[in-house]
Image (cartoon, rainbow, N blue to C red; front, side):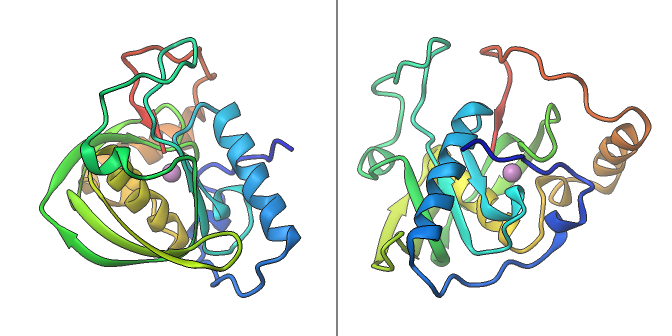
Length: 194
Ligand code: NI
């Protein structure tokens, strides 16, 4: 089922999400709906609060696809390749963050705006899967950036909180004044919405 993605300034995007304690059929269904919604919206990541569910769960699939939706090979880092995607991540904790990297981030909840954000280059992440089993993964590349972006959503933080006051105010004022531009067909040049 395709879910409605909330957009800034919806106050639910500013809430702190609660840990998942029940690994039941409802949780599994929510994770499947979130993946379906993420693909439908051409995003590479989606956090539960973005669909109005204030729980610590997110989904990602950063495997590069061409415009016809085919997966492209040999563009991911070695560490990224090792991670099985799509990935459902529950109750995530960053055990270790190393180095710095930047990327032009967008967000399905702030559609059509892109700004350069700095993140850890490499992360070690502990999380539970949809059955409650605990895993640890290490990754860098776009997957690392996307996971850090989605984890921000669980704290009520958006990528526009990581950029300069001037740039973030410009975006907020434009949204207040004219709303979001109509969604156009994604082109190669566009950044990724996370
Ligand atoms: Ni986002």
